[in-house]
Length: 122
Image (tube, rainbow, N blue to C red; front, side, top):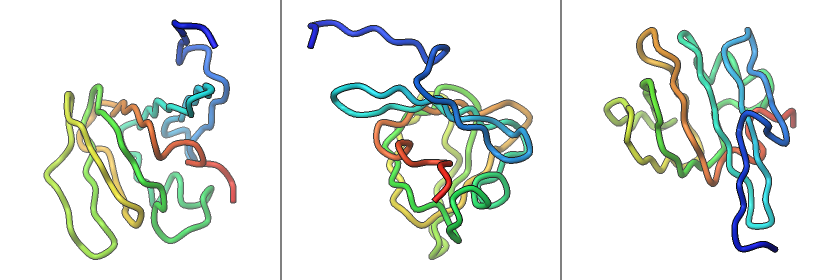
């Protein structure tokens, strides 16, 4: 392993499109784990654009991430919700939730935990 690694999401190891052309997940895999960049287009909602791929009733990924741009709203299966996450926000979201883009700007988020199997057919 080298002391410095440089990778680009524009040349990701894998890209997984969401249903309805509402965005994508770009995944980079390293010796230390995977990191993903998701681009959620306006109108994206997990229950409409990833649920058909995942085959679960709600998102079962645990997310540890950072919102680069745009806004996203998350609601837990039990009803708990946080105000929208926006640019500069760090977020931890446990499994069992739905989420959607707020507004007319794509939401771009980085995730160090929950994207390895995200939007991957079960």
